[in-house]
Amino acid sequence: MRSGAILVPCCLLAGGVARYLCRMKPLHLTGDEPFFIVLNTGSGRDDASDVQATIQRVLDEAGRRYTLMPVHDGRQLPAMAQEAVARAREQGGIVVAAGGDGTLSAVAQTVLSSGLPFGILPQGTFNYFGRTYGIAQDTELATRCLLAAQPQPVQVGLVNDRLFLINASLGLYPQLLEDREAYKQRYGRSRLVAVWSALVTLARAHRQLTVQLEHAGQVRTLRTPTIVVGNNELQLEQIGIAESAALQQGQLVAMGVRPVGTWALYGLVLRGWLSRLGDADHVFSFGFEHLTVRVSRTKRRIKVALDGEIHWLDAPLEFRVSDQPLQLLVPPPSLRAERV
Image (tube, rainbow, N blue to C red; front, side, top):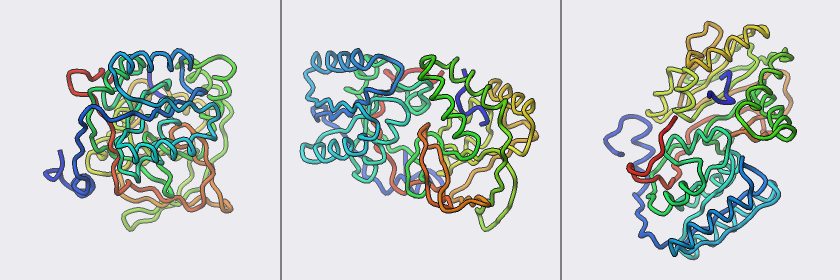
């Protein structure tokens, strides 16, 4: 099933990736570092008590030191992440995030500047970030793989210094996410519910944004219902965006849709399912290192979705790749899950 983005080794590498990765000294773990696990009990597809019990059982059986740090209110995530980082620094430990995409992104925001190793136990619906690096959605498998994982520097995107792992968007896509969350609260978390809510949202989508895009010394103005900036190769490949290879060159990928009607939007949804979105005449996409987005008739703040969470950011929006990569714990090849 395709995503909710419905419209949607080091010094030998060339370009931005080489500049970016060579700044980091490789980390190597001994295998006895304590885990500080920020667990969002309000996110994810599984029961939080079952997730917690599974994590405890696997780590207890392995004799690994850990501290579970449950968060019952998403607004507490930044503070709990800061506490986890402080304790990991003091004890030479690892920060782990357990939850959906928004939880992983929120904790990574705090971990990034610390340079600490970062582990994930994905609980989201689509799990694009974890799947890209072979990290299973199954909590038991992911926890067992965490024990054998080693840090690998991975690229993250920034918009006005706010981190995103998968994508950032404005316009119609944030509305899709808000409606999807409302449907999930009512009907449960599943990919079918996510797709159905998107179809309903598209049926009443009429507003167009007038945006000014500035990159590579060029400025262009256009009208579009949405702008999405991607940082996940797997997601871009699955919806059929050819510029996904730009991520390997240390770039991000911008995507948008020219003004179209409801039936044309439904057609784009189908193309995304068939991995052919990039072939559509109404879709544009390009790779970039730095992009400035200005929205006409906007005051000081713009609604932006970052990895499925809604934020209000100051205008204009400045997109770029972080100078510092995230030190993500990645399982060894023999333990990696398939990316399907």
